[in-house]
Image (cartoon, rainbow over all chains, first blue to last red; front, side, top):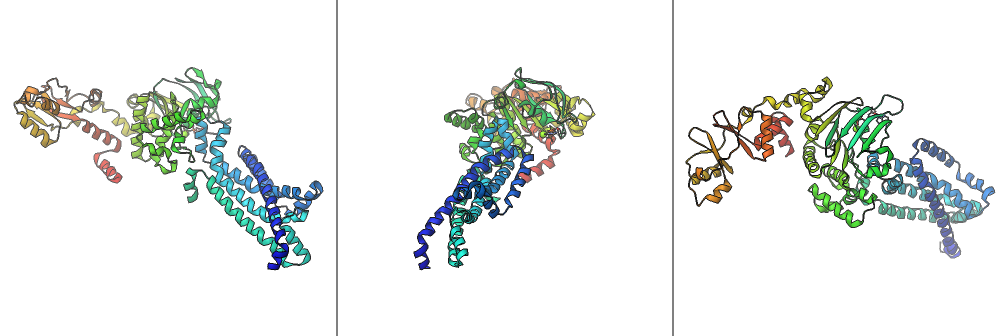
Length: 214
Length: 384
Ligand SMILES: Nc1ncnc2c1ncn2[C@@H]1O[C@H](COP(=O)(O)OP(=O)(O)OP(=O)(O)O)[C@@H](O)[C@H]1O
Ligand SMILES: [Mg+2]
């Protein structure tokens, strides 16, 4: 154990950092794209259901296949890894945004409209804040998955903790496999906690009680 | 104020939901729309603030066709209270009340001031402004819903079954409160309801609708007296039609026939004792033939106690009375209009035969609302 840290300690820290970097970059991209898209979809519910099933089907393509698919297009390295992972982050966020917005009490939305809110005001002041807990749950789920999947980035030269796992597999060294898996799991758990916290803080005051009792 | 000209609304290609509606509502009028479910009440109302588009015809607010106004601006200038309460759960009561102010970009101080002003109208403490809707009872939330519609002081307010989801006692209280508020603020109100009692109680005029068309528009009295057709009669119900003819009831039938009196010649001291024993603040004074001569109240005794010794020296002789054969309806009007606490009832010879007090009227009203007295007592017992 000590031996391992002596030889791989530095590397472990660098790889963990890379890992986090890839995952967070992918998630941020996912949030930036999926939330507005989810809001747009909520304006066209007929189309939305079909679109979301379609994205769902895309996501059943094995991750390795997607990663391999990106090599000819984007080459190897961090960028293709981030882009591939970004695709995986989309669905949970997209679906939760859409459902969150769709399930906002229609009476409240109508009241807002009847008071004279423009469509944009209604989204910013009513629909988005009220859907926020559900949206955040999607982001959280996405993040946890992505930190796990990011180990595959190593496969296309993206680096991260996956490097340990692949080395371990190639060299038949179980300790390296563990060195890749355990920190990834820990990262995922920490991210989950942090986001749970954030979710709680971003839930509008007046929704907290009703939301917690659900 | 609000005019409908040949207004028709069709959803898709089917039967029109509202068909060729014509109606003019005056400023300050309280108009109730009533009719069976699906008859087009909500549709009619939502066309006014353009939540629903008119298919044919025109709606004019203050002489201007709403079609030519920006829908968002239009809605900010019309108060709106919806069927479900529709308060924003993520906003404080303050933010909810002045929502339209926020949309109109009022300064913060102006919003604060307005919120405090409004919450006073419904007798809720100012601390409530910082609460969230889920911390309030249904009745309190609905009061806030009404205040929200009043925030920007719109001359016209649309209300779609605002009290529909409340229990009968809260609803009753809110109706009273709201009617009073409306008289004070002089708003034009379009009020949709399912509940005939509510319409009769609140409306200056009632619009009865069926299948997207107006069946009758009239004052509550007129509708009760002359229902336009069988549909209206059925809708009113037999009970109400009978109650709606208080014309046949005379004052003599409902009066309290044991008024508290003293005879001419009684000393002031004895009169005061009687007042105290009977727990009244006013005595009727009769002579030996039981003819009503005047009345005496605590105030005049207080003022003259030193100077006078018998009741006739201080009694008020300019007393207003009603004949026992007069119609209940007229008597009620007189009492209410004069703001009197009671009115003595006399026979042809001006002899005192009874008294009608506000309490008598209240009992009468309760009986009308809740059937006979025993039933009412049960309800009270439940409420406690
Ligand atoms: N968005 C819509 N699309 C199609 N038809 C509609 C729509 N809204 C209402 N309708 C139909 O129009 C008719 C009138 O509906 P409206 O909501 O105005 O009735 P209402 O009198 O308010 O009824 P309630 O007392 O139940 O609220 C009904 O037959 C209803 O089915
Ligand atoms: Mg309706």
